View 1 (cartoon, rainbow, N blue to C red):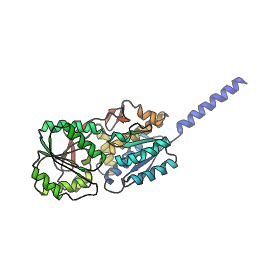
View 2: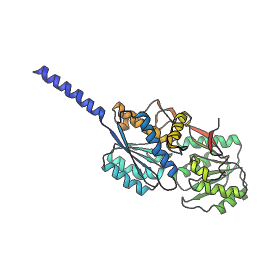
View 3: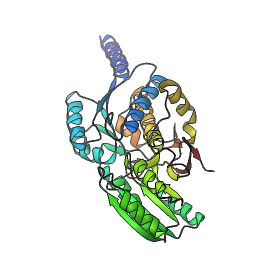
View 4: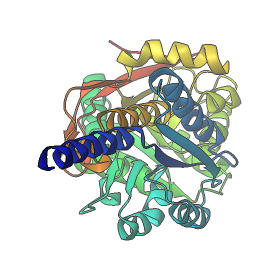
Length: 346
């Protein structure tokens, strides 16, 4: 009798493990599929779809997508919907949207995979991580480039958001340059005539442009129309093919610093073949998040534990792992806008 019972227990254990291995993870993706950052929103969605098609052969993970228009209040509504549906994780693009949602996912004890440069979004969070090259790493590389290129007098123009202001303030404190213009613009302000004239009059060695779409292209067209031909540099904010196109050549020659995604070139080509477009900012982060989630499902381990203890992960940003502060060890690279292309500067 004991033998029969033990065999039954063993069989039940095997069946339980088998069923557990077949359980699917449900992931909600909140991204701007309308509004000014639609290029990045579509890139996030498409990159998740691509990663799912490449790595989830056994269909262990289901991804659902919702458009937040890059609005925090919309993000909260969608997050509540996903939580009520019992999702295991939420992927979300952007800093203000992530900050709005993290209290909800912490309370619900589900993983929040935020695509943001700002570390305070996930500071002290138990269930949230952020994926992007850190603003500190971007700033370090930008400061090095500014020194190498010999800029002494710099004009700065920035969108009023956490990412732009973190980069601006870090640059001012670390670059040892004279800031001849320092102006902020609310995201809906598109009147750049006065500041462009002010910059031209100040005759800076270079302009640090930290405006997000569609402000960047609008500003650069005004600045170039005033015949300012000096260097312009930026961060990840210009990594947007639609903005480059909208600038009608005014972005040509801008150098910028972003995450080092050279290892992801095969995936970028696969993206272009599948979706017929060059991916915008955020695609690599979303792709790697999706791959991490699929790997956790395959290994049948708790998702947040797997992500926070990640080592030797191979993705768009090369081989890297988890870092302190609920983030990842992603390096920065300098790129140059040449026509409609974004080329790595070696």
